[in-house]
Amino acid sequence: MTTLTWLETDTPQSAMQARLGRWWRAGRRMLRNPAMLFGGLMLLLILVAAVAAPWLAGYDPNVQDSHARLLAPSAEHWLGTDQLGRDLWARLLYGTRPTLLIVLLVAVLSAPFGLAIGIVAGYFGGWVSAVLMRVTDIFMAFPRLVLALAFVAILGPGIVNAVLAIAITAWPPYARIARTEAQLIRKAEFIQAAKVAGIPSRSILFGHVLPLCIPSTVIRVTLDMAGIILTAAGLGFLGLGAQPPMSEWGAMVAAGRNYLFDQWWVAAVPGMAILLGSLAFNLLGDGLRDVLDPKHA
Image (cartoon, rainbow, N blue to C red; front, side):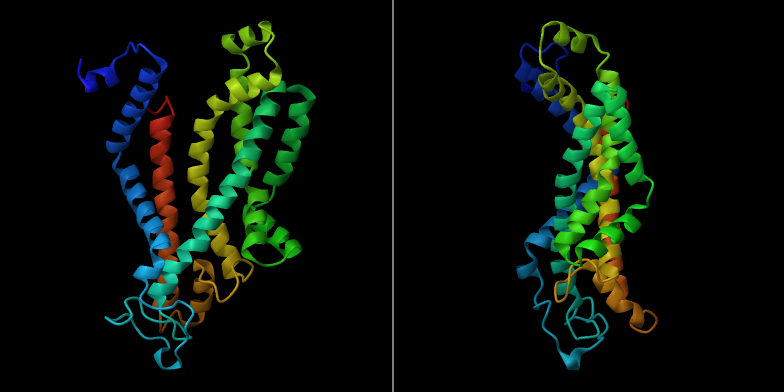
């Protein structure tokens, strides 16, 4: 039996063979999805830009040069310079770091919390579900950016407070999705068998319900990362996100809005970065839905 046949068999002889076969089929579906490949490639380029910024930039992103103010894109400054004479290519590369940091920290903070709230509400039901879902509805009643602005106004400007504010507003969708799936899973026969066997509710939640809710949560997190980028850029645009002299795409757009008609590149360069970053996560999330969701596989 060849390795390919061993991976693609419908009758695996072990749990490891079944797991490797599932990963193999998922990988093949990824390779057949051009949108996901394009989004993954764009995201890879953004990650490389963040890691290799000191070697790719060519200039210090914070060094000002009064003699090089608002220069158009050229061989010396590939994307031009801003109103303080700083190289936009360098600032764009370094600006990927706070953006990706915000996206990662928000996802790490909000997704597990929302997932835990959702599976508890869906599994136990009754008054537990009613209370938790009403709290979730309160947070979902407000637009995310408006609610994030309110929390940042209370906590104060800064990248850490921006992460906390966005995370506080980002968890409700994960809770709603996890609750719906947990409600369906708790009626399954294997859950009833686990209860009859005397397995504690905590073990059922984390050993049976949680693993089945993770794929949809991962898909939603990936799709939400585009919205997190836009929210972070909105806070930066208003001066409530990353503070000067740190490079941040939203703050760069805000700095260039006064020169939009004559020196368009000052605002267009970071604006295009926000567009491409959001597009990359949207395409990747859409592809993951096709790969991880059995209904779309």
